[in-house]
Image 1 (cartoon, chains in turn brown, red):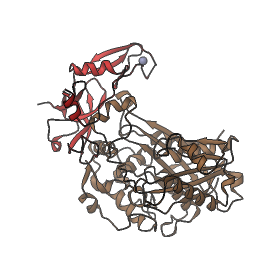
Image 2 (cartoon, each protein chain N blue to C red):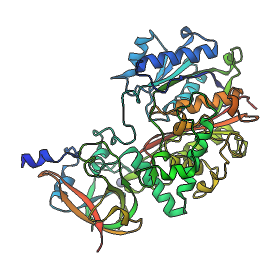
Image 3 (spheres, rainbow over the protein chains, first blue to last red):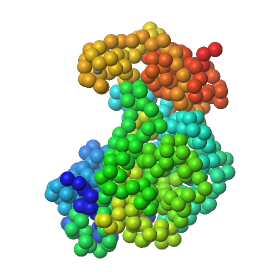
Image 4 (tube, helix red, strand yellow):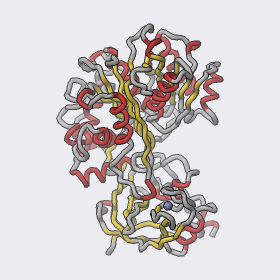
Length: 388
Length: 140
Ligand SMILES: [Zn+2]
């Protein structure tokens, strides 16, 4: 059974907050749920499936959230694989809907990482209990450091330059200037990125995503039901997910999960790379975008630096990417996959205002979760405003 | 000895029944890898079963402790106690001559002189009475 065209995103809402010391995580999640359901023209009573990660929500967090909103869903999924989780949830929701397990799934996220002063990238790596941790944590890995080691190897093997990495941050900021909700909207140049301090070599501060508060939600339902709702449906055409890790000491670190998840998503969608009008690719760091685009097959391995250069990633360029400003400039509360979905939905519906991609019909969403240099997940979706 | 342990603020490994022999060997300044007696696959870090074929038949291979820097980063920011007082430090993957990569620190070398491909050799750092870490330094 193929999922192609079976389900659609019918509601999508991004919480406008970037700093919410006066709100709780559950409150942000609930407000996001309300926003996405209003967007769809549905009510909370229509929800019979729930996906959320449970991360930071206490022991068995999904149950706590069901209690908070008095939900009694027939389908639940708290897959927690880092920032890509919500992208994977969307595919799981579509599969559950297609299999008849439920009809309308709420996928929801909220975080107060900034107001709690949670050092996501440089607080050391969380954990300690897993076997692999015993051989890593004593040496001082950080999230930034994990990605920085990928960047260092990429530069060594392919001659990728700091200027090419910086280009990703510069374009993100240009897009943020067109997004009224983005946290950082002042223009920056390649020179500004290179002049910012090194956090973990070769990555500068402006190569790194921010830490903000935030939240968002999407609502997924059957294609049949989607046609009667308030907004144009955003159909799921194909999906894939994958994990990469240290592979018993044998890993090729420049081959990432996107290679597997992307191939599956393209095959299942029956779409070619040239048909993609918008790419929403997790930009935890500038290097993440370059390596992900290579592994998704948009360019050959080693060509990512050249691929992102020359303004190509602008919303009005050859290869529009992260048109909301991304984690580098719009928001990053810790697990950004949710906002990749929401911006893709906005663009496919023609709601992106000053940053609207012309004739945007097919979008690729790719979330990366975890740490590229140790263990990470990848989840890819191909979405469209029509089922061809 | 207790005072020395207390003074070491960085994270320490949790020793258990599965990994203790490996850590005890490190305490003797011996670095080991594992090889499956059934399928021949080598592995790092140590674990009870072969991930390739799930065999429990394991052979311990003594590593020569020689390899090359596969990749690295000089860390300038880390809020973790112990590390925040030792900035900058070099986090790296070393590819051992036996073919496996391990996460480690490059020591006895100014961070700006570390290069990918640089030949390195193991140095055993007895960080507490119970724990020795395998770090690497450039081959002179
Ligand atoms: Zn085996």
